[in-house]
Image (cartoon, rainbow, N blue to C red; front, top):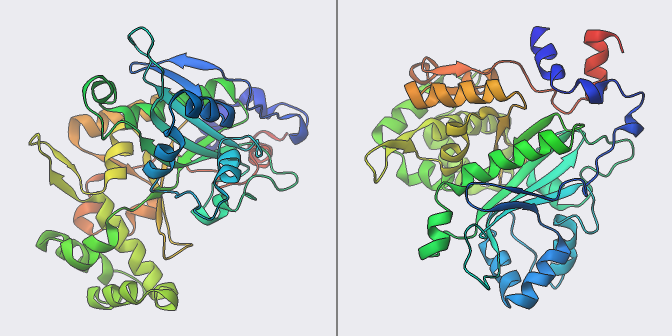
Length: 366
């Protein structure tokens, strides 16, 4: 119960409004905010069109760089741009950090990085539901959560000034977006990602090391209905219905849990995550909250960003100092015993899409 109180306490003003209809999500509230790299802005469709005029080819670059949630190629590109950038769907938001810091005279600013978000009364479980355009727009759906479903470093192929400004931009982009959401959109009390698993199947099939295989084998053996690593590999390779069998789904979750926890030595000699998304979110304090296989062909991981600054900072400090990763109980249960012994259990639990007013009624009798 105390965990519920800790979630609610940061959103008291929103909780005491008399009805869900009065809890307003206004996409026009936020204008801009300076950051270490450049100005954080809420990027709109109109701004994209203006950039295209001033820098022809910008839209093509935007589309080319988007690999997590690819844009359509059937002629409906601008319809999709309008949806994602909130022009025809007010429940979509895109934040960008611009390369305008200490810019030379005459410089035309463009994004260093971009993060896409979908606002709803619950956190999204698949990319398909977000891309469908329906997510978050159902009648009575309050604006209490934001699912960050893609983030792009628009400067990773650049050199010189843009490359320098973009160092560490991924983690900074998410954290700056979180600060803005917390400050300007008080009805939003949950922020989490829908992160892709880039390279997971290749790792599972061919790239897993002996240590990886040992951890996988141990984790798979602890399932209620265990299957072998060879069976899991065959099912993932076959695709279709083979991936959706309950035993395979649980085995997939266990394999993903091992994948996102595995470390490797980086070019700088320091340990880093095999999974790029984990390497982005865990060091800044996000919980590894859920492994999602609702769409078995596109499994995802939920990294949860607490709106409690102290919780987030404590997670980040614990990882920086001791390498301890914060995970939710439902993720820890899929780890090998050796891995599970080295993690911190996340404090509190997500509301998991329940209307937060209902959660408040349980605790304070609204």
